[in-house]
Length: 199
Image 1 (tube, rainbow, N blue to C red):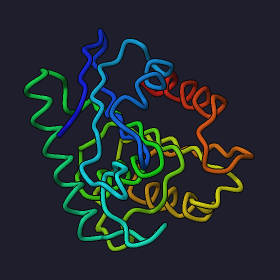
Image 2: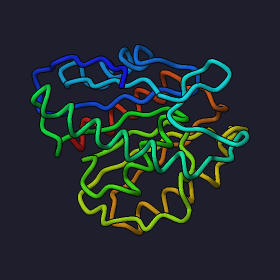
Image 3: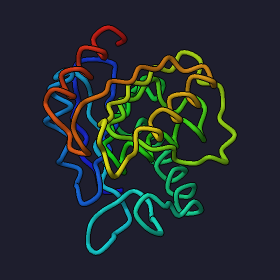
Image 4: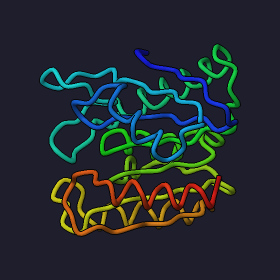
C-alpha cells in the first residue's frame, strides 16, 4: 500500500487514514499537532472514485459496498501487521486517526479485528458495518468528533457508533461541534487534549 512512515521517539504509532480525495500527506500536520513525537504510518486509500482515493467502495453517498469494506479492512489490517515488522514498531500500540472515509475504515478495524488498535481518533465517523460481530474492545479508547449539522454524517450515525463501541467495552468520548463535515482546528485541539490524558 502506498504510505509514509516517520519514526518518532515514543512507543505510540499513529495510523493516519485520510478522507475521500485525500492522500497519505493530508493528516501528517494534524498528527504532529496531537503528538509530535509519535511514529507515523500514513496510508493512501487503494480505491479510486472518479479519480479520488478512498479506502473502500461505496454504492452511493452514505451507502457502503459492504463486501469491499470488509475486504479492504482485512487488507489494511494485514498491511499494518507487516509494516510493524518492517519498521519495528509495537503493533499493540497503534492509534488510528481517521477523517470521514478514513474514520469509517478505522471503525471497521475495531469491528473486525480484536487488538488491532489501542485507540482511535475518529473525525466524523459513521457506523461502518451493522452486521459485524464486534469483538471485545476492553481497554480500547475512542474519541469521536462530530458536527451537529453534518449533512454527510448525520448525528445519529455517531451516536449509534458510540453505543456499539461502548457495548463492546471501549472507553468512548464524543465531542460535538456546531459545524458541518469540515475538520476544524477546534476539533483537533479537543482530540489532542483527550489524547494527552489517555496515552
